[in-house]
Length: 392
Image 1: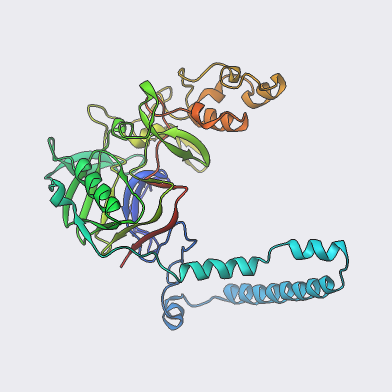
Image 2: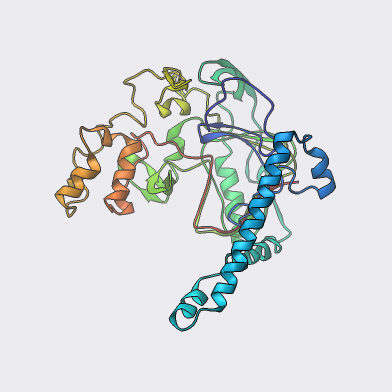
């Protein structure tokens, strides 16, 4: 998501600040289930009568559209009936083929049935303060709040207590003892590393809990399971649906089951500090986007602290090989030239990873992290089952 040019009321569906689809500030959304195909739109959880009162009066155009939609729906139902009758007339191989095609409505029923059985956790709380976590003091910092504008935002004061180890210890003990709830109490907390969820653990933010994640990319290349040398200790990640080894997201899990991230209410906040400058630098996570803002199809040099030629995800990265032959030696020459195209623009990180995917390069060779500019998302859960994201 692009940072908004003008401040406005946050969406009712999900309230958060987020850096261009990457680390930002999230408020845990009520009723949201991830990994379980539950994403009701605004008002979907309300009684029908209340939802109807929330609708704006229909204009003539709306009435005409509703009438058209109704006719289209009737036509679709008629087509399905015709298709059903035609299906009854099938015989032999055609009937066998038709029977082998799964019914999408049955798939929908199975999804609804799964959602009717919520994830469950052992009734045991592990409060992070019992493991050494302590709230932090805040100081103002001039940060980017849009492409063009800066404003003072609160950030943990220099020397703030790093709660990463305490939160990790609480999660690991909770997991080892059969699961339960890891509680982050009300207050401001600084975490210089990812919160990694483990099976049967519900990380819960109390009302008024505000977690400030480190704004230093190096803190997300310290604790991963894959040691990639000078690129850091990275995790299995995805960037625009392409698998890679990269910085950890702020909230991360890999191949875990029965996990949850919950909050008491809208005041439970995960803050990725996307517009806060990196330590000792004027750049921030947003700068890595490296692309110009666009107004009425006219490019604008407005990415926070970005100027053309500065290293970013869309600029040629000299750390990437000069030919795909170096990482895909068995790739036919014609295909290699087709993937690379003319020039060396394919060597920019945001083009290099898709090129690796198209060339069939294995995951262990798709190494990014330190020295590269693919920003991690705020929350990334890979290969996980029975996941709940929810606030009451």
